[in-house]
Picture 1 (cartoon, rainbow, N blue to C red):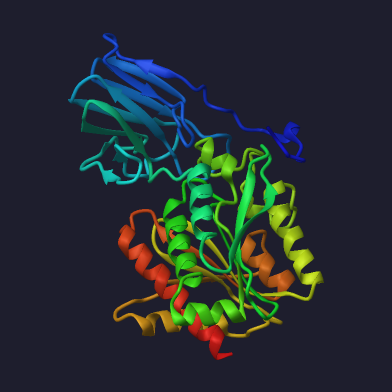
Picture 2: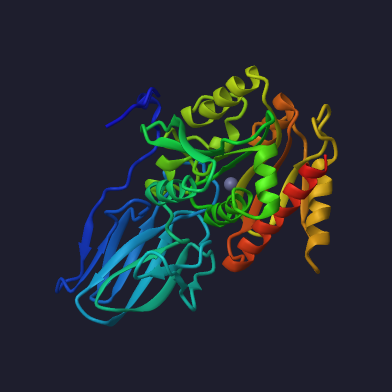
Length: 378
Ligand SMILES: [Zn+2]
């Protein structure tokens, strides 16, 4: 079923073959038949050892080699895996889960000199275990989270547009703001960037939550959130791109993809109605925690806000130091477009791949509290 209006002839990615692979006595099955999976080929080396070939959706592409597969074993046993990448270095420490809620990391990974092959062993129980580059958080998981948040008082969910494959781009907003001032949040333009998504969730839950400050914020500002910009890429196990074969965070000038167009058009409509986006946050992941800010933001609606916000975060938590990397706002990324076209203060909020998950939440909440405090002072 599709409500898509995009042009599927523009699809330039190769889809993995969805398949079950078995060892010789059929006691172990490895499958990629689920959303978020990535296995392009599998070689059975012996009954307990498997080489998993992982490829990108198309090239050139950033080195974020995503993989995910499910193991079904007839008994508890030790299994050995080697991940084989094409001309790319191993990046993500394997995680595994029995229930898709609690994830543990594999203890030790061995790589070859080029880091193009990564080997690890794990003990699996009888039944199914999922192995994934990061915690598996698919478009269905996102839909469920959006639905949960929309149960909060004065919060509604809506569909802001559709992906190239016709998946809804879910959004959230609070409906009780008495002003026309908007804070706009997006995440997951890049499918593997789960740590950024986790920070976004902590941030949004805090801002739309029930603390006195949050309630005050909600009456005075509107938060609009698009938590998963690239559901096609996420569900197809992409390393980086949309199903259009495009890095969505390089499409904020050309707007050739429906996902970015949806945001451009929504913001245009709201702006025509007299609303203004004051602050924009785009959550991502990289090698370490860092805030990419605009070097200059002439005409900013709230000049100096980002600088004060990051200072506030440092003052709000002993020992916290925000790493800040400025760049110009003439580029093709989301933070440049919101700054240039809408005079918003805008930041790319990057979270490290390995940042501890409870720390991600702590800093996400700190970021929310300091934003609320500063905006309410205005
Ligand atoms: Zn990114």
